Image (cartoon, rainbow, N blue to C red; front, side, top):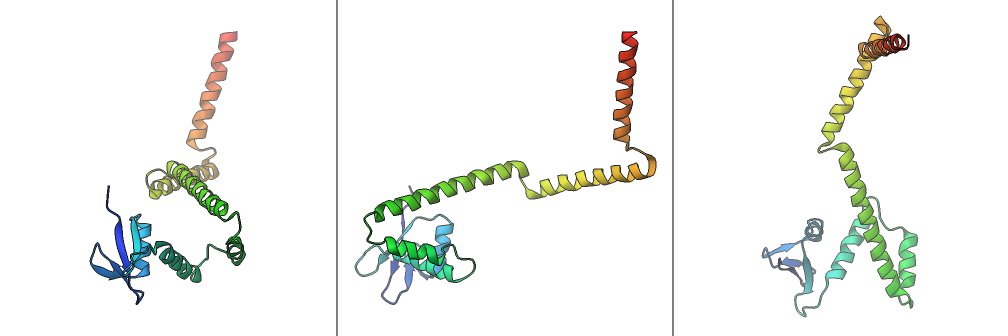
Length: 169
């Protein structure tokens, strides 16, 4: 089992990654999260766990830029829930809801992946080939009647009718 990475937070708000013996930024911590690295943020002096505080700081910074995840109404409701007798239930509900969403997202991606195949280019190539076949059929239909595949099917159908008539007579 890999050891949990320890990041120390100093009073000057700098973060020190003990694994790489270097100072890091909040963006570096965010990248650790994206890379699914296990870590804990500790106060350099007291050793208190500051992980939640740093995670909230990352969320707050990212909410300021681009498309926010949390609406003002949702944040207002979360603030109102602080101190409520059902506060613990709310946290559990949000965690379960997010996990359900993530499970559904993964299932959806799996289904799309099975439709698309290994690479998106495979799907695009097959669609392009199919469109070219349809275009050729359309052009042949304009110039010389039905496309060869349609003519062959029609000939087989006529042959089937002739042989079935011969059998009945």
